[in-house]
Length: 378
Ligand code: GDP
Image (cartoon, rainbow, N blue to C red; front, side, top):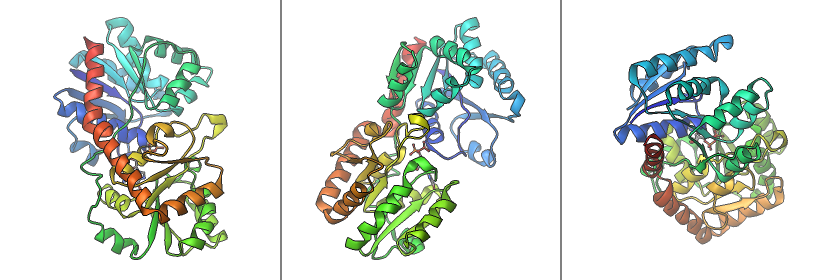
């Protein structure tokens, strides 16, 4: 197949959507398909693009041309390559306009992968709304990263075909019992019980609740350390909170870490925690949460928030535990319990690893997307 993927969010951007789309493109390329990606220029993209098995076509995005440039790009590229299918990497009206026109004029099918918030923010704008509905109803299929996202799309009045496609994880890169010597030395983790969060530092990830839960954990586990990996606009506020709560000895901000040491950081932790919650009246929520399955892939138990699509990422009581993200006391009790009960913690981690191997390795997810696209094309 010849596939054109269109997205606004792609590496070197960090975050779940970029990770999801990059890996789908890698898998489809490895399965022998030609994959072209159209996406805006970002700082550092040249270095990232050259080492990929797919081709990336960048364009500069000027505000008032944000719709026209990718639209023209898609038309020209389709004229040259005659794509079998167009893959819209996240719901957005501007980029999907090209796909809509190609569908109506040349019957080229397109699918849209929705991640949660993307649909809401398009449809809430009165100018985009009618176009968004046209784009939705002309799609051959809507893919959704979780059951919650699918429900949100259906609540918007969409009744066409919809299928769940969970993101995956590289099971050979994120694996249990990796060599952690280097990270132990770098972050001075020797003799510490490590509670870990990995994410962009944005409000809805729930770092606040973990920090507020920490004093009670410290009372029972004196050598605990809360390691916060990732960067974002919340960092200054979170650092202030750490000082206010007198937790400086118990919290370490690692900032954005290189991909090559990330698996070892998961391996060094005792518990992974991220009690994400929804904002903006329930519209800004965790669509899935790749980080939970990355931690599981390293054999670690996870604590997630009962919110958004996390129930698809964390099987409550099997691969981790779900807590009410506002319940600070419950968060502190759950962290403490998993730090104390190593046998139970290890059982959750093992179940998580098994699930990744059976269902969520990128190779498995890649074959799924291939099957879906082949069905649409044929
Ligand atoms: P989302 O960004 O809200 O969609 O959250 P997800 O949990 O779905 O995805 C986040 C992705 O970004 C995961 O693959 C993380 O490993 C990755 N990520 C977050 N922070 C960092 C970091 O500091 N370094 C690296 N290398 N990856 C990170």
